[in-house]
Image (cartoon, rainbow, N blue to C red):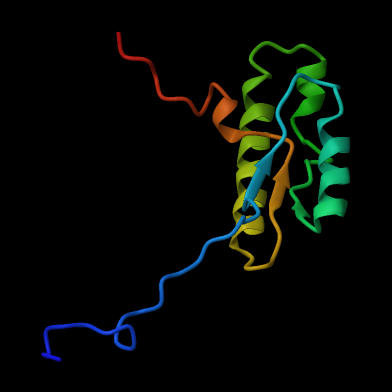
Length: 116
């Protein structure tokens, strides 16, 4: 056998791929339909890490008092906190997926402006 010919002993093994669990699962939907409840159930059954939602939001008081311009601050605080929690969850090299009840890309503050 010439040096340019390969044998199965010299070749790298061909990886076999079976069904793989997803790394990240997002549950999306309108308000108050049970996204967080479903995320909790799935996390328990799939042994997944769940990205928990923010419990305290320092800017909501002004928002609920309907002060002009008070919607942007709580939304940006929420997005920054959610991004931090998602990054932390995905940075951990652990088996099982990460489950979230919020999709960052859906927020219009993060979308790219449409060119006209």
